[in-house]
Image (cartoon, rainbow, N blue to C red; front, side):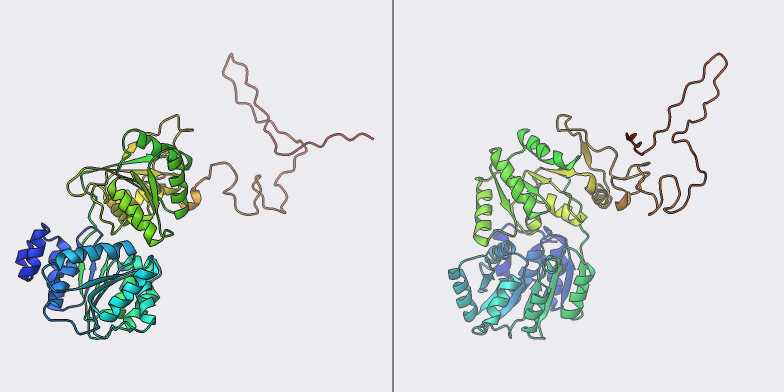
Amino acid sequence: MRFDELNLSDELLDALDAMRFETCTPIQEQAISVILEGSDLIACAQTGTGKTAAYLLPVIDLLAEYERPNHAVRCVVMVPTHELAQQIDRQMEGFSYYLPVSSLAIHGGNDGKAFARQQHALRSGADLVIATPGRLLAHIKMGYVDLSKVEYFILDEADRMLDMGFSDDIMRIVAELPKERQTLMFSATMPKKIQELAKTILTNPAEIKIAVSKPAEKINQSVFICHEYQKENLLKRLFEQGYNKRVIVFSSSKLKVRELSQSLRRSKWKTAEMHSDLDQAAREEVMHNFRAGRIDILIATDILARGIDVDDIEMVVNYDVPHEAEDYVHRIGRTARANADGKAVTFVSERDRQRFARIEDFLEIKVRREDVPEEFGGNAPEGGLRDGKGRRGKPGDRGRKPGNGRNKPRGQRRDGNRKGEKPAAETTEKTEVKATKPAAEGESPKPQKKKRRRFFKKKPTTE
């Protein structure tokens, strides 16, 4: 469906035409009509499907119908991160270019002057406020924010906000809102805690669920089954082969991000790190340098997996396997955008095999395997991603070898008797010899080795 087939104003359609927006995505086609009708909405769709435009376009049109009351806020958009707040604010400027609708981004990580500017803008009022929960709550506690006239309350990436611990902050902000409002909730996943939140703050909502799409076909996906200690050398080999520009490397922890970034810088690669411990000014500088090409390789946690708009990424590396299949799709979806080609490489260590097997089940494909070079300190782990005939191994099976005695019931000795019990047959010999196998005619029987006993003989004492 085209945007001009929807019930949007001419001014808004002019802005979309100037931005070269022509065709709706599925979430936009379904959500815009519901929002214009005035219903509450809960929508499940992954990042990159056009959710921001799905709620901004109809809300901008509704806000433009009449002027805002003095010193009031009419719409609040809650987001989990500073970067997403800034990105939505930039999109808001484009969409509302021909309409008299004002917006304001409220987020932390900046200096006192920025806080003072936010304070002044909130006192004056704004049509639409895009805010992180903690910073908006800090302004509310100071007593000058009027949310009594809010008509639209929007939660974007609600699942991430709950994962980041913002549940209590969100409910405190909801307590400041009028009961008569339109509430819209957008989430990439729909776990139980999101469903419970929706029951609390939404009224008879319409529901839209867009299935998580598979990665773009132009993404060249591959996987290395490797040991943990081989990962860094594999990564450097990829860089040496020419994949060293416009690269994002995702790792599972901030500590590993810092360590890997420092190691790559020592190897003279132009890298930077991105994680939640960086303040807002540092994060903005890193992203600015990365977009400008002054940084070639970005080492990041999942803070970059969603909501960051960088279109020309050539390769994504999963240094660690993500926890969920949806996170894998979000990560590698950073590349092959705008009809470009892209490469996605995943390093799978022994502990991550089952997790990546679940990702392949979700994708309904087997990702192409790459061989680990022999010179990288030992062979790659043997076996596939599963144990047996398609059966995933149990977590407790890792590292267990048959015959090593670890799987015996507690308290049972190697001779099969429990502690404190006498052996079934006492022997006076300290060693025993296995019966020899009958030899074929004309052959002499082969002697059998004595069975080694696990004890130390006492040394003879001298008097």
